[in-house]
Image (tube, rainbow, N blue to C red; front, side, top):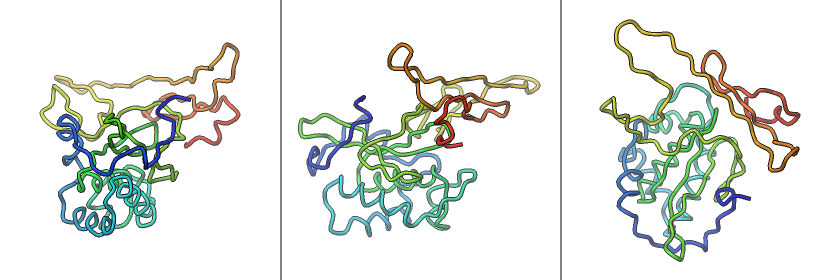
Length: 229
């Protein structure tokens, strides 16, 4: 089993840590639609951290609060502040709230995208001083400290810079730059799991992009019916 799918335990990590400059610079700041410094986020983080000092316990408290207080609602992304005000949001808003709360208490955090789903990771140092990105699922699954999703990771992070455009992106979606008339563009992509051994079962999850650019399960494995969409 690969390292990123192994579970982490609270006792692996000390109660205090010094955040590396490169991590602090990127993963403790606001991102597009993730308002870490907003009064709503700061107030909620302050309420939830009462009596808690260990960063693991803080992160767990944030991860547990989100699904209990944010009603799942599929739709276009709004923002962390809007989701807190309406108590509604898709998996991206729910993970975004967790990220914002972590950053508000000086725990680096980021979003992780796979086809049709989003979760979060937070950063801690272990007893030996080695940094780890630890998964936290706030929608669909309740995994904390371990990851049961074996899917293609499209992006990690939510402050993406594009050289051709002077702005930050939360998610770097498929796009092109053009001059003159707008071209018709279609991205073609396909994901096929590989078997661990020759002739072995590659498992479910094969996907390809349809004409609209959406990732869809190909339905050529008996367990594909259990995959998201």
